[in-house]
Length: 369
Ligand code: NAP
Ligand code: ZN
Image (cartoon, rainbow, N blue to C red; front, side, top):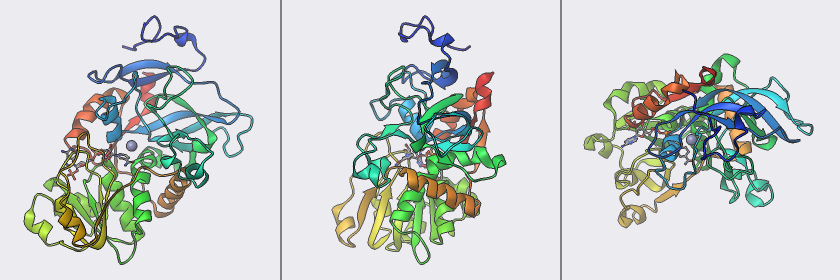
């Protein structure tokens, strides 16, 4: 059943069905509801806008956190999705960088202040005015942004990325737009490379990209997983060593040895177990955003080796393009399981169980059905 916003009091804009920019989407009207089909509208193509027919959209754990309002602040209806790839179908009159039929991507950012230092320096991800691809303020209906679980999107050209991968890899490129950049940016910031020992905790969507990228950068990579079943698979992704983090002996063998540990886990846990693995001056970089806090770190575990706990959020637009080009040059894409839009609720349940190798990607053509 397609839920139409027409005649629905939750949608004041009852002309939506006949709207020239009406598109089909999957989303939810409440945190306790499953995702379901719905009709949404996109704005008219402005002078600097790019209109994209979305081919595929990756399924990030942040989509689940926000659809279920686990972080608070979700506005409904919520159409998640910020790992978008597709083909340009129209451009505004002032758009210089893109033409119809170009293959492009859109990640987590669709607008920012474009004025102050963060934006000037290409760090739109740290701009206080950053607008997320979904759940951010917007002047067009319904008053907030709606994401990539939809047939089309209209985005200012500044936030559109170019993909140089072969077209037949397009579905597997989608997760680079969030999982790729979210791991690439901290790996670059903390200088993962030859001679560095880098840990990646949690082998899910982000973690499997972290392993591939750190390996391609030349670091010695150790994967930490709670899943014995991922031991061999993590090596195939490029990990030099794999530690099942529930095994105390395996953990102890790596004490005081890491330059950087990238923690992607989506649930609260004891950070001390990883802090003690850092060598002098090492950094535990958190990218996973659990709905409730981690166990507080013990100060002695920080001061004894001048260790740091840090955080990192996605990446800016220039760095996202750099990451896409790095991945194209190194033949890196995500390992994916392609699903139809109607499979999204099952996919969320399987993601919670860690039962995906390693990213679900929606085939957006199935939205037309
Ligand atoms: P994911 O695919 O679900 O992967 C998370 C992995 O963490 C799991 O595969 C699992 O790996 C491990 N894990 C261990 N215990 C877990 C538990 N109790 N619950 C869930 N996972 C557990 O998620 P993702 O898409 O990679 O996202 C990971 C986190 O990063 C989420 O919190 C997401 O919101 C956040 N995120 C942050 C940013 C940012 O900018 N900082 C960007 C995107 C996403 P093993 O089986 O190997 O243990
Ligand atoms: Zn994401």
